[in-house]
Length: 78
Image (cartoon, rainbow, N blue to C red; front, side, top):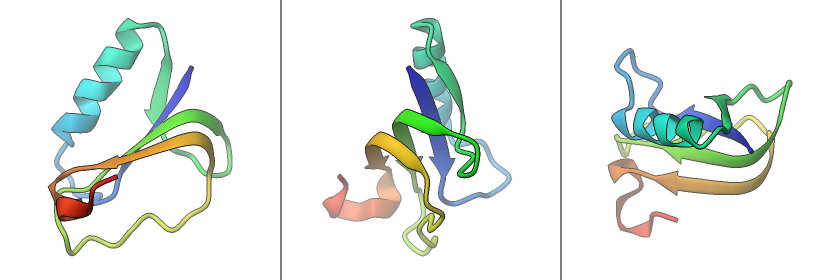
């Protein structure tokens, strides 16, 4: 599977949740990397947000499934 990662906050600190998901998928043999909208179709994309004030990722990309999570999404996490 081709897995894409999006750190919505985009700060200089690594997103621990995305790094754990990356390690888990790589151990299964999946291809994992940060989303590059112009250069990829993804089977699954993980989008993580820690802060509620961070703007959503607006660039379009192709994926079959999108999973959003993190404390920045509050109670309405999908």
